[in-house]
Length: 566
Image (cartoon, rainbow, N blue to C red; front, top):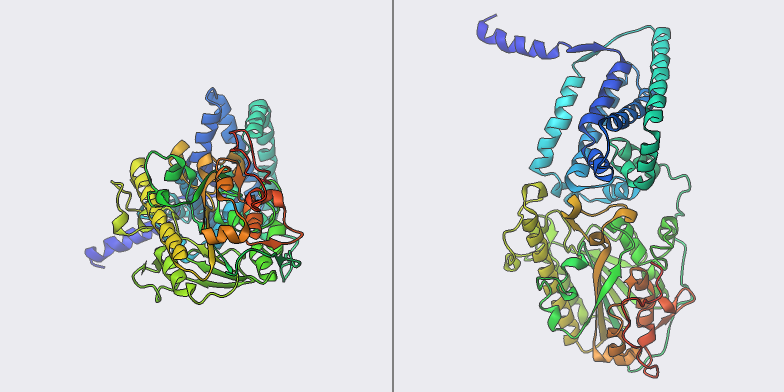
């Protein structure tokens, strides 16, 4: 063979030769050690932050416990034939999870797995950044290449079984000693910082996915009805009622201009005669949790995921009362909330000027509403589900005209941008939402066939680098205020106020009272003059202000509250 051909062949042959010869058990132990050393960056950072006085010996003991625990679990499923395929899957999973926990501060629990399972293609592709690809090259492709160059010993099964039992016994003995050496500090750490278990990779993803998929009690095929007794109450005037309910996406109260943010990100709303509520908390930190909860009769304090998923929503109660209901979506769907009513997704063909690359700007919602206004008949509730500030591609959520705060982060890979650039892009997106809401109010104020109102509230907030966290979805118990405190605004025409007996001055007096997503269900029913046994008037933030015979309450102090479930 010519020399010029012999060299490539020799190189390829060298790649096929094994680097090591190991037993399946020893290979599994080596992989678990690699996971502990290289795939737990977020976990170790949080451990050191929680225990700054941690000694080297305690740290080594924690690492030993983590390694041996993983080994004892994984080795139960490892044989000579399954070792490489299963460990390959674990490497891929560990690489992907460690990227997001390390770069965005993500905690992987069952709600996060729900988010992943419900993410559409457009959302997923935004996360496939060059930084993510480079990370996978180092933490997935490289170890997989080395893994498949290990030769596994071929042993007769009785001897292999004996070896397996010996490894397990040794592992249990080492684990016992490591726990004894670190018991007090480790117990204190895990008791006071239970969220750390969501950072142990890849166990966090495996356990959370298992819990999501292993639901033993399936939901009913048909959602259980609620509010079937709903009826419309008499009201003044002869115009039908119209409420536009705008569900914002990923907008946090901290950057909302009307809340006193240093930047005026809501200049157009500031000129409107509307009410801004300053203390509104969410039901969850992700759309998959918050959206269904917002439209349920229960809130965060009484949160019951099974109840919410197995029962009808606010929209169904409105439908039972004879109200026309329409859901218009510019996001990744309604998470089951709108299944019982008319719902449509914004079409890119109908709004070519607002849509590109399969995504539409939120002005398409305004265009869609204007196209339908004149054809509406009877009492109507229209829900507009915004694209809003959905990350990490904040720069794609607004047109060039709103490129006001600079420099911006023009990439989905936030690690390549300064925190200020990320905030600038995020604020530009809020500036655009302000414009969209202003246009919607203008459209409602300009029509004369309905008594109109608008209620806007965001589904959850967002972290923009505070405490090293980005995006959203943290377990609620440890989520920062940036992810749980959201804006909410109310606008209504004088004709609407007169029709339902709403004293706007009274309602403005509650603007600083603590509210939450739990108030939405009952407020919409109350404001639309609908009565049902499922309603709780104390949860309706307009209840104390409807009926002109009732005096307006004094402006609440900072310690007062509106009775709320969450």
